[in-house]
Image (cartoon, rainbow, N blue to C red; front, side, top):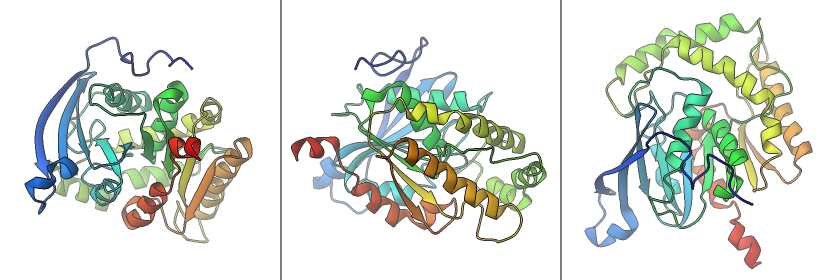
Length: 307
């Protein structure tokens, strides 16, 4: 299959995308004799007026990890380090997150362009084969978008609590006040202010976050069509209690809706596998070891051919 326009190669954007190697570091405590195994390389990808910080480290089959909304490389460090034991991991910060600067737009398409820009450099960065593409939350939706447009550029997908083809909107008119309050939660913003200026910072405002959450309902309403264009293995790792474990309020409906979306996908694509974890949406932090083990067990296409 010939790669679709916008895949790598060729570069996905008509404007210049600049990649620069910034520095090399060794995993703390490791001897220099292990540099070939433990070196972490740090790059920047310049596109669309923003600078995307990229890191690469580990040994094994290539894997690209796309963070989600309000998550950074620094936040995901435990999962990243676990994955690097078995994978050559490339990861990055989305615009307005971590070491990436603020931007003038935070739409789904803007974040999509960040992932496409990073993956456009898989050739120059020397990935030996198409990577396993792993996305968390918003990052899962970005991963599906990329794979649907560039199916030959990935070996498979692991989608963590995102990219859910929901049968109806997650946020209804009745839910809006609660989601607006969540986006403006003083405790959350105190924590955001506390880490401002660090590798964990988030530069989006409450309105940016709520607008993106509403846009995600639109994206997920049509994402089943994107799944139909992907002929690579897909494994989903989902939270059984994305809205919490309360039996009152919005939680029961949202938890049922979350499971119904995955059931809908499995009916459409019976070869899609799913693992449910009895936790909430912060599963990448609370269950990093379990998630890394699941990803470690995802079959590699080359292994299937060999068998």
